[in-house]
Length: 328
Image 1: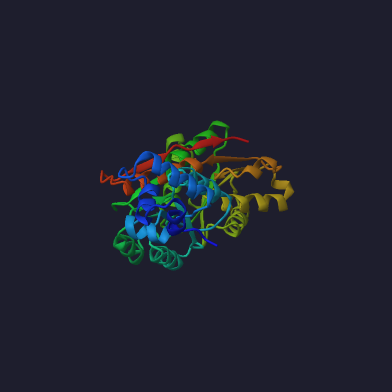
Image 2 (image 1 turned 135 degrees about the vertical axis):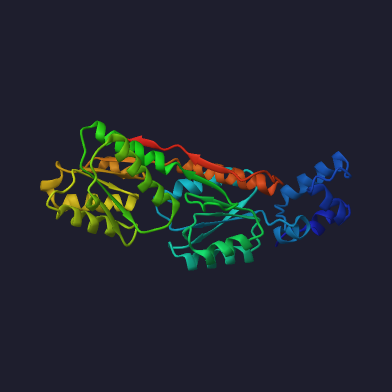
């Protein structure tokens, strides 16, 4: 049987309103009575009615989070969010968009129907998707974007410094004597993907190496299958590259898969990419990666959101997290 305020009040011989005030740490209740009530509530395993509490505070103490998938890259983001939200008393409600802008909006609507206090979004709608952007602008609760942002919008965001990370990767590879470098990307208007290509071009120009247009290959998706298909295309060239960079972790795995199936190329092709998956250390093909600070991304996004919920009305927060080059 559940224990409520009435049962605690009857046990101690006080009014229900006194019990309610004591459990809310109301200063109108004297210290000794408050201690008795809190002790009794604890001994009776009293659990507050969150729904009723929400009617009073106008808060549900929940944060909505929408991610594109639940792969390993997302785990650290979630852990970072949880490490900040949980101590502050907030629970996280999760939605998954499957990289589908329509499903993303549907997941956001479901979370808003649950009256979440704020939202954190790994945005997949793209910078030119006006329907998605109009919907985001209609949301009344604080919204923080992670990994990708919308240029010239008012939304706070926490992302990686993708452009500089990509440039540093090219500079590192050139310093190792590599010059014939290819880049596999995807025709997507997400800021993270575009900035990685921009950074690649920055590195090429800075290092003064030649870049045949055929060395930039764009596929249909950001998945491993795209990396494999594009690597196949590059290896069929009369003058194939000696380095292949994948613009995402999954694309890079597609490159590795191709090379594992063609052992005679393993020592001829150097692989670079983004997202430093732990298991890359166990592959026989070394992959030099641009590691993102995903745990920190989650922490900073949660911190910004909680500050907004506490009344921070300051200027837009734009956070670009430095990346780290991991050489193998």
